[in-house]
Image (cartoon, rainbow, N blue to C red):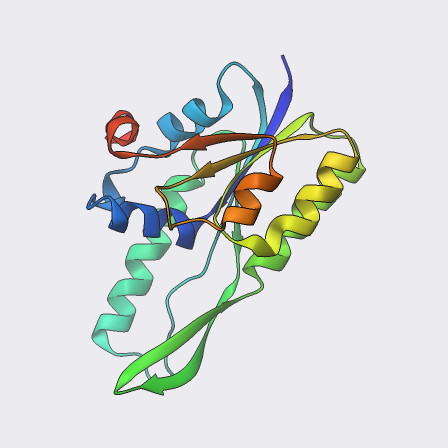
Length: 183
């Protein structure tokens, strides 16, 4: 059996759930992790996300969203070999009255964690749950070090085609298997 590290882009997996018309709150992460890892030994699962934006004087809604996300992170912390990596949500203005927020430090942290594990020979394979082509360079580096890279992705148009072609193996989260990950 191989040692596997799993890297989950929280924003991406939430997007998959929206596309599949399923409530993200119903996801059982332990079942998802087991499906991703298969028979392999789980070294660690890393989850990347941000807490909701808080203005200088937070509104009731902002405080509620923050509390909900903190409870969610606390529930994830209870999963064995699970690590949460937080970025920062930054306000970038608004478009037609709608606020624009951008995640910062999330992709970089994910790439650095992959690079660290690969360089230090901690794992034999990695699984990344993302659709972002920004990860192609670190995927290539991992492959150059002899690591098998598995992409866990949603339906067509939720992932970058070049990333899909770059990886060694792929698993799709779809309407059929999604049901097995729900509480």
